[in-house]
Every structure is written in C-alpha cells, then in structure tokens.
Image (cartoon, rainbow, N blue to C red; front, top):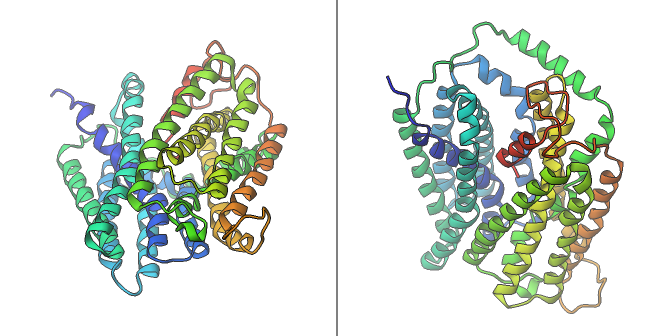
Length: 460
C-alpha cells in the first residue's frame, strides 16, 4: 500500500495545535476585559492557565505508556471541542467567570497534551528526511493558527459585538463556531490520520521505570554547569514581555478617558493578529539568519536590546494617546518585530543549555521554566497596574495607570540586561560553520540544525 501523503494531515494537525493555545492565552484576556472583569482578576486567573504548559514535562512520558499517540490526538481534540462548546453556552450566564475558567483550564490541559501527542506522532509517522522537509510546513500552519486565533477570531468577535449589541452573545458565538470547527477536525482525523506502524504503547515501559528515569533527568539537569545563571536567564530574560502580555490588549481597547486608546475589538484583532504577527515572524526570521552568520554570543546583547527597548513605544502610546490608527499599528509592529528578533537568542540559548546527556528531556525542562517565567509576572501585572494608578509621575492630565505601568515595564528591562550579562555562551554556538550534531545527546555546538529547531518551536 502506498503511504498517505503528509499533506493530508500535517496542516490540520498543527492548526489544531495552535488554535487552543491562542484561545486560552490570548482570547481570554480581551474577552474577560470586555465582559467587565477587573484587570487584576483577569491577569491573575488567566495567568494560571499557563500552568499545564509549565508542568507538561511531568506527564508527557505517560503519553508514551498509555494508548497510542493517534488515540491521544483524537481524544484531546474531541475534549477541546466539548470544552469550547461549554464556554460558549456558559458565557451568557451570571456565573460565567468561574464556570468558564474551569473550562479554560481543562482546555489548557487538553491542549498541552495534544501538543505532546502531535509532536510525538509527527516523529513516529515520518522518516527523518521527511521530518526535515516538513518542519517548515508544520511551523507555517501553526503561524496560520496564530493569525486566526489572535486576529480572525478577535475581529469576528468585534463584528458580532457591533451587530448583535451584546458582548456575551458575541463571544459565545465565537466559541461555538470554534467548537464546531474542532469537531470537524476531530472527525477528519478519525478518517484521515494514518495509523503509524511505530505508534503503539511502549510495552517495555513501566510507570516505575518512567519515574526513575525522570528523577535521573531532573537531577542531571540541575547539575549542569552554570545552572543558576541559566535558570535566571530562562525566568527573567522575557520579564518585560511577560508584564506586557496581559495588559496590552486591555490598554488598546480601554476608553481614552481611562487612559487607553479606545480601539474597537475588531481593530485590536487587526493590530495584534495581522500587523503584530507578521512583524513578529519577520523579526524571528531575521534573528535566525543573523545568528547563523555570526553565532549566538555575538548577537546576544543586540537581541536583548531589541527585545526590551521597543517597549518604549507603549510608553509613548500611553502618554500621547494618538488617534491615528496607522501610527498605532506602526508602533505595535515595531515592538513586535523587536520582540521576534530578540526572542530568537532566547530559544537558541535553551537549545544550547540542553545539550549533552538527555538533551531532549532537558530541553523540555527549559521550556517549562520559560512558561513559568511568563506565567508568574503575568499574574501580577493587573495588580501592579492598579497600584501604580494612584501615582502621578509625569504631570499629565487624566488617568496615568497605563503610563506608569509601561514605564514600570521599562524598569523591568534591567532584569533582562542583568541576566544577559551573567549568562555563559560558547562563541562558536549557532554559527553556520560551527560543528553540527543535533542528536539526542549532542555534546557540541549546532549551526543550521539549531536555527531550524528555533523556527519549529511553537510557544513563542
């Protein structure tokens, strides 16, 4: 029998990976703000939704032990369809906040598990040369999911808000549509997702063996050289962005009287989901090319500056509150381009630190600390905004909560500079002509292979 073309399942598999992630971590922010939830409550409770991605390495080995990857994919996508439908039906109720938070937490857990199963299935179904050939395709369709999740669905909610005259009804409709879409993807995968010959439960593994191996991996991770400075880098390098991520959308949509820019929901979807995503991708591509040419160490400081300094555009927007939509798009686009450029060095450093024994498992730990570094500051961002709202620092008219908050973000840039100063990197790592060895336990620096792995990473 001829093998089924990867084109029949890779696009749907990776769109289905991306959409729940952005639904949980992006749509919830603007939706809850539009529904009248306070910034401090929104930021704190939606921050907890990162937790399944933080602890993902702790249960990912058991996906190998129980059933097949294909079974996990279909089961989790069916659960995602159910939880999205539940959100849609619960939003018009008086107890929507607590009820939908439970649904979103289940959605986050199912999404993280679907990530594990999908990436594992990809490696089992495809030969190594096919994996390399399709890595750009899977990344592209994940980016398409990003545009849909951060742009298309938000713009749809904006149009529905204006047409239906009801915010709860508009967002309820969005999640019911999303649920039907996921139901369709689940049924499609039941029919067209191949039964990979290597996709079967590991009969040779026991839970006790997994726990023993996990303990060994955990210990060896914390025995790596320079682990303290590495952990500080993983947790604090993105601190400015972690602070911004929960407040930027509320700032864009808040009324001008309360210090925001007064954009409509549809305009916010366009700014973040199209202009922002395109700029982010352009910055990431340029960053990868730069590191491939000169190595990670050469670009570490320029990329740290690119990640932090464009945050000043939010200070400028908050202080001037411009009405020109094109200027707002430009400012957000510049900030996102700088973030995409600077984030490349962060992901390459995770690969660099994970090298050696148990490189794949150690990389999973690195990404868990990366998620934790986004989760904790984001939870506190709303409270910090409320505390800073009481101060008048710049003699401006009107509320200064967002002005003060974005200047606080600029202060957080000092943490990025501090950890960049202390981190240790081999000068040869990342260069195109550096030694290549991207095996599971690769002991030396990587060139193009490392860059490709950055571009395939999905949680940026």
